[in-house]
Amino acid sequence: MSPDYVGLPTWISTENIIRQINDAGYELAGHVEIVEGSKVDNGVKQIAGLVNTYYIPTPIESWTDKSLNVEVAPLVEERRMIYQETIAIRDTIVQAANDVEYYESQGDRSRIKKVQDDTMMRIAKSAESKPNRWGMILDILLKTAIPILFDKVVGIPLGAFVKSILGQFIDPKYL
Image 1: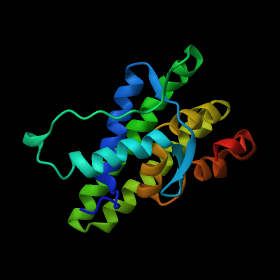
Image 2 (image 1 turned 180 degrees about the vertical axis):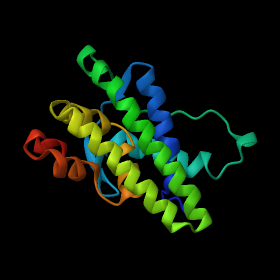
Image 3 (image 1 turned 60 degrees about the horizontal axis):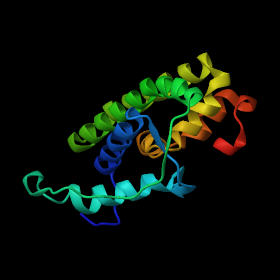
């Protein structure tokens, strides 16, 4: 595996690590940059780099603890409530990424297409049911690997997809 190639397994593992940070009451707090075509916190890229260059190529029995310095901030109360709403969205996209990875290994394009369609439908329903909250939801998701996973699974940037559904409800800074 090339250290420069970051595939679905790396992004899924990265998201699982970020989810543990969030579950502990923190969120990444670095600056937002473009990673693989998606806006995300620069900490996402750092975590993916560690996963890709150490944990994926190293047999699990040889793992040792590694440290990585990323900027984090406590989830403030208002964001903590919105964070709870992101859990179902995150679960949907991570499961879709796992499914796509599996179906790609089987060469099953029809199942991949079904996963893509189902994922877009679920995200669209969520956005339509809470249009006023999706700006903050996107802001929280920018501090995760979810925008990259969504783009890799569906082929459309998450912000652009949500904007196509909600239009004027979404602040352009989240796109």
